[in-house]
Length: 396
Ligand SMILES: Cc1cc2nc3c(=O)[nH]c(=O)nc-3n(C[C@H](O)[C@H](O)[C@H](O)COP(=O)(O)OP(=O)(O)OC[C@H]3O[C@@H](n4cnc5c(N)ncnc54)[C@H](O)[C@@H]3O)c2cc1C
Image (tube, rainbow, N blue to C red):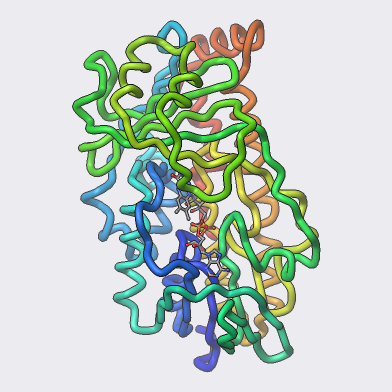
């Protein structure tokens, strides 16, 4: 158990910041979480939470807030986008829950965020401040001082910058000017009622449709009552933020090559939002003295493996564990956190990039991919992800 006097300041009440706050509070540390936004409005569309993430949500006491709003898909069905031919149907449901000791969930991001907030608000050691934009941090030998955009100063034993993809604190902590590099693709997302799903498609499944330069993913959310739709396609237009409105015609132009039943499903959505995909230049370090980056601020990953939020959960629990075991040596604990997480984040990022290349193949490469998917036993392919879904925190 960490010394009582230790306090944490967290910049950002997103998935990673709230999870870190709960994990630290559970280990006896008082936490102030400063969130830039005044309100948490729409909060994105679907999010997939593999067993590695569900295990952490259970450990944090968040899962019970979420259980009625998630879906537990039975399978992951991959189709050739143009012909609608099913290439493979990999097991999720009981198969993956038994293999990894926790289920594979799909949820609306809003529901995950609401659950984390409800759990954090029930925790007396956590103070959540909205409308507080942290813009700088100074790290000394016994603590940090963070300053908000309005000039307010906050002191704590250490700071966690969980301020997301467009982190204001990344450059200060990493000691570098790291650019976000556009990858030339946009993600378009919406939600439709579950009854819109074509009857020939499995209702309780994650569906992935592949075409050259584009793919579409859809899966049940809101306890199976709605379907989250995501189209990821080549597109040079760039936007900042997660919620830029976009017109349905732009999405239609991206899916013209897909099968009619999929286009009909997408036609049922009216409120499309988009975000642009970026990768981050290499960061020389994630920690500086008593300050550490966490989640997307440290290592944004492309969404082709659906692990961005889960990596932030893994960071949160790892960081809380090393701090709790640190005996007051916070700087060493944060360095240990970075050491524990670097290789894992890089491995997930590389696997996600690889999936993206496979999903968007064209010509002979796409033919070879489809043939391989058809012949490989689905459970064998899924077991190739044991390294991902089987992750557990290392004992300190
Ligand atoms: C509104 C929103 C919608 C999203 N929608 C999707 C989606 O549909 N699908 C998907 O796969 N991923 C989505 N994401 C991203 C996904 O949730 C993250 O990749 C993942 O959860 C990593 O979590 P994180 O805590 O590192 O960052 P985030 O969850 O992005 O949280 C960062 C938080 O920090 C706050 N913040 C930023 N700067 C400061 C600052 N200087 N001071 C204080 N607070 C600050 C932000 O307002 C935000 O609440 C979305 C993120 C957001 C914020």
